[in-house]
Length: 293
Image 1 (tube, helix red, strand yellow):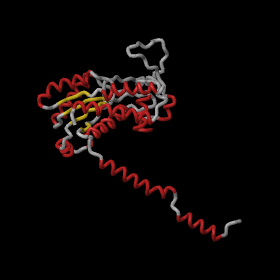
Image 2 (cartoon, helix red, strand yellow):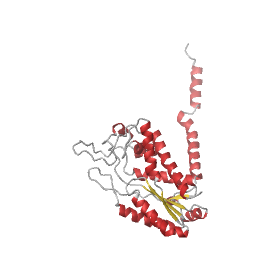
Image 3 (spheres, one colour):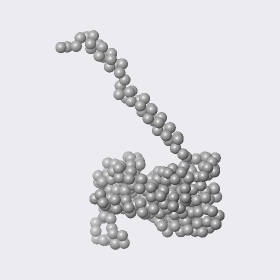
Image 4 (cartoon, helix red, strand yellow):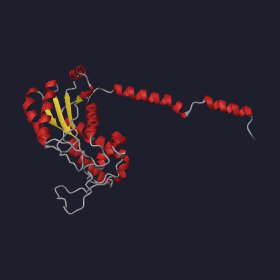
């Protein structure tokens, strides 16, 4: 039976009265956006570079007397990851550490660490270990002059660890401890967190890698998505094999030489979330042993 003209008109009028899916979703999206903004504004200010000086002073007076210096790095990270990965991850990592500690301020992340530039893989700009030591010493003492009572230095990049970091922490600890001011090197955020995460990957049957492998690529994918990681390249993200520690590389073996050491093809956001949480929790736990809450 064909619908009557009245029924057809009625149905058409009703359809016009109903909001389209985009219009129907708009209030919900606006509400979610407002909720997210409200949650963000309610979050304590813990990033030194995003605070005004009165806010820093008030935070220190209120007991946030620990300065967290986290180093990043600028280096090629394979074809699939942006060069600023260490720094980008470092910024979110140290902020989360500060939030969980509750008595700390995250200082600006240093974007350069020990490394060497290459015209073959042009993504790296590096310092020498000596320069890094001088910078860490200088900024730590500047934090002390600002009013911080504890300084923690740590990093996302392996260059200079532990020598540069530990030597600076030990030197300044000896210099300032008698004044009730302390400087610590948090090594577990890098070495222990990474080693234990590699064991977890191996237990799950996933390939252990080092530079630009599954942990790096997954964490960048989780934290920054397509802006940090070219997701379409992950299925081809395999590089030179991981060598046993201390083992020489076979000079006759053909190299891929694309900046990846290992196999990043099974990288996922879920693994990245675990890697991020792993670093943060290891750091928080160790820092709490340095500085009683």
